[in-house]
Length: 355
Image (cartoon, rainbow, N blue to C red; front, side, top):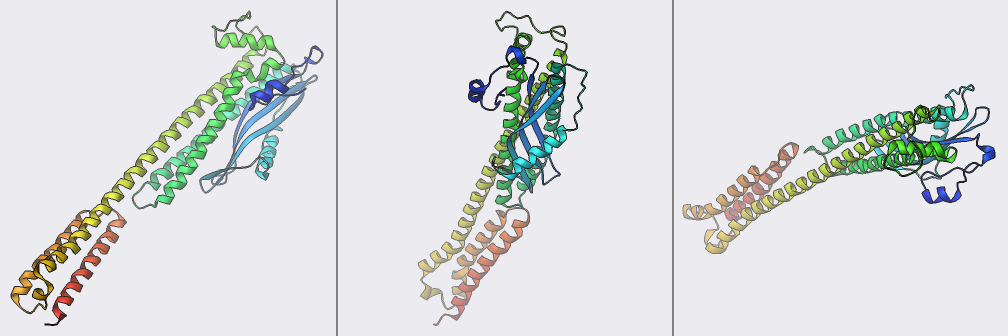
């Protein structure tokens, strides 16, 4: 029997063949997969599906179909290529965890498949909490990256990780949404139960089936529980995706604000430099340097006073517009140093100039 590909609808409907009357004892379910593996700073996020095939005699086959794998390095996520070793390692870790699942041979095939699908869907839904914890960590890093003392490169790294996290939540939500739409692929082996459950979910659907109840099938309660786990998983992931997008919008706003502040400081510094250099040049041009230098008389010192006043105004303007934090000290030292150097050059030149 060929199984569908839940991530590719075209291939699914083109290649999947429902069981014939002779092999109706084979039961199929496909549950969504979302797992966060590893310890902090070295975590691996896996999305995909798990195919559950239960044959006669409670013979269970679980196949892990890994769709996407992301690895974490210092709070930064990177998507792996399907041919990489990371895919194989993630698949083996998940297979090892599935071996711990116990199967009751006394149950019929549909009951076993429904219970396994519910357990796997619940495990994937529980993994949303681990994804949420990743978002909390990145949110904290983003707040630190936006502190005045940090560099712009720190914020760029966090924003890149948030973009990858948004891809993770969106991919996992797509798998959960597809699982709900297809009813965990129940239609492949029991189309009547699938259509009845569709009527239960949406009474406006036009078909000849009655809405499913606990009496429709003995395992319908577990199937309903599995679908509800997928629904809750999708809702939580959609909420996480919305939150991440809000964080990205906030990061963009903060970045624009910082750029505007930097431009404003640059304009202020340019104005201070223009005042500190332009006013002395204007005074020298009006009075003529020959009349001001050398500074050997009181009258010449008085005429040279506008040059000193211009430098003082430039210093006051630079000090008033200095930013806060550690950058303030550098700003003050740099601006004061430039003005002192310019003033010293002018005074030395005026004092030592030849008669």
